Amino acid sequence: AAINDEDPQVAANALMGLGLLARIDAPLEPICNALDTSPSTAVRNNASYALVRILGASKDVPADFTEEQLAMVRESCQLALNHTKVSIRIQASAVLGLAGDEDSIPHLGDRLNDEDPTVGQPAATAPTRS
Image 1 (tube, rainbow, N blue to C red):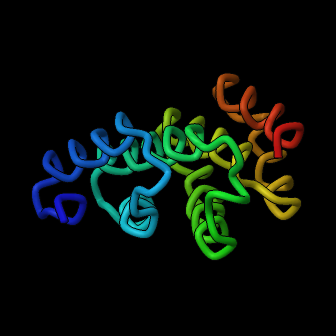
Image 2 (cartoon, rainbow, N blue to C red):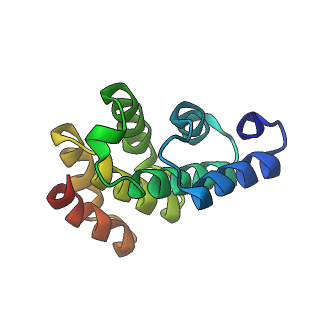
């Protein structure tokens, strides 16, 4: 419930906590909603961080998450690749490397020439991990 708090600091802290816990049973839908819709950059940044940590904790992403969950995560992260904040773009690239499919490759390819070269690194290695 704290993810949806009106106070962006509370929501950002809740998302940071989920990221630190890195539990694969964390609720992905409110995290994706925060990444997609929050007016707060801190909330969006921590939502992308939470997704990196949660999916990164999985030993077998396709087995640990439903296809519906992965599709939702991919859609959110594909949109987040266009965010103005570099850390959100980097983390979205990393998540797509963990949860991406063939449809994610063109989105990641667009980031190879990102204005910040650190965005391109996870984008370049993502297809080899998916």
